[in-house]
Length: 196
Image 1 (tube, rainbow, N blue to C red):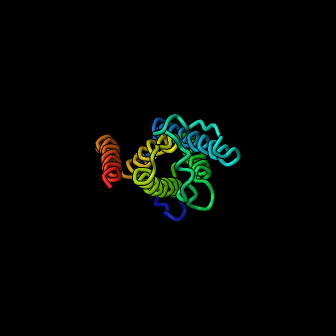
Image 2: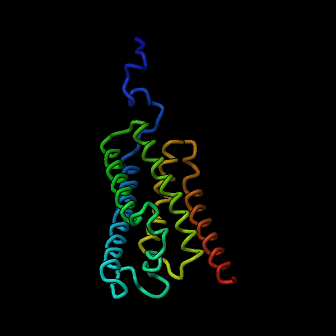
Image 3: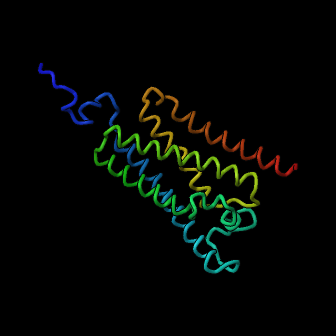
């Protein structure tokens, strides 16, 4: 058998130990990314309406006193980088969607998948911060933001499981546990706010 030096091999050839994402895995990530992209787009539309029409704006997200994105838009946290977070979400989820479509097409290079994982992890950290802000400061939940909160965790966890197949048997317990933990923290934070 002829030995081929690894410096002459492509990433895919060297990384035979990595699990190749299945079509269903890629489709799952693509669906989650598309949902995040849609929610970010709707939030951007509501943000534009609020900016142009002011307090008279008829926002899609304004359902009642407890479900409304207007209070969130008034905080500095809504523009972490100096522009609306919804624009950041549009860029991030569009990039994730393009990356997952590439996965479905067969792109499995480690660097490519690692970049997507790091970007998603940074997004999850930002979501944790925004969740804390919402639970501790705001009187209402932003529905579009909540959709993003819901899909970002499985988007991240599925990628972690893909990188570490040994964790595959934990995928459902950790996924459900993450939601339960976030719910408990949210309820405790809101409860402490009420008691203050």
